[in-house]
Image (tube, rainbow over all chains, first blue to last red; front, side, top):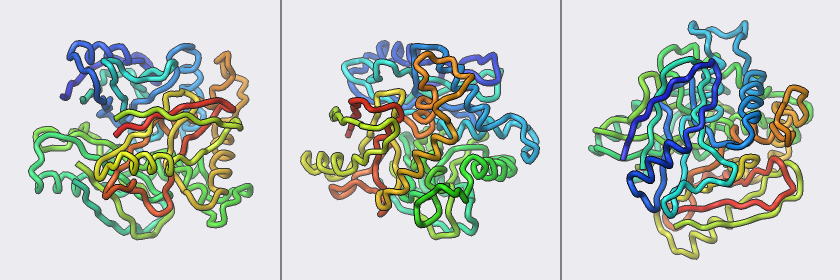
Length: 130
Length: 130
Length: 130
């Protein structure tokens, strides 16, 4: 079952946790066991699974990705000037696979699912498939 | 259903779009809804989903990956000398998951599926599974 | 079918091949065709598919990842001091998808499945789902 959700980002780089939205949907559909794919249909954003506790991790990650893939690069030829965002998107990936067991997302204690904006602010969508 | 396809690369680093090949196969098999895994059975190549419009994005990405993972590195011990290609392969990943809905790949407007060669030229294969 | 396995790592960064463990389990369950997800429920570890032959590739990869994401970084704010491990985890990804055909993992000749420790030593777990 395919379902499209949208969100609004308000910074150029931003990690927005979507774990609860997905869990709520699983609970509403009463899915007991299975799997979910969280898919990002954009090329300057992605999905990752990472730490859900200390918000400093997100800030560190955004800054570290920006150091590895700096926004401005004199050799970039892409007219839109957002090659760095495309790099980050391919690095974290367009989708993540999660398991559902006994009605709950099977995530590690510290794991959360994140929509990663790399060229905001924009209105973005992501897709959940069971 | 598993199907193996092959392609020939002609550069060391190259992103070859395979979206249409996969779409044609889905259409031929008349698959209405489902999912496809595009899998790369090589360790110096990978699969990614990224921009399908401006070809400069591919060129920028190849150059940027090469800056982060330079081909020559005096500390590399791997005899074949292609450690950089292994790094890039693990960074983009060995496979991508795509959805099929109403007979079409559910990709974002600007998304294309790419076979990424990181140690060509070679004859390579990839696998599509529905 | 979901199954949880555990392993002990003994270094900060370590790539441990788990291909045979997964193949043995597939053989034991007598699964002929299908797919397996190898999932890592930790945020400072991940799963990747890469070279299974020359062990120097693993050592080069660990060193290269450490250069791109250095352990110590004066701007990191995360109290645990392991932001680099979170970066590496999101770069390789939390899971890998593998195909099973005729009772065997459909891997390329040189491909192995690796549990990647990025903040050991620890006792870790991973999940296999068919």
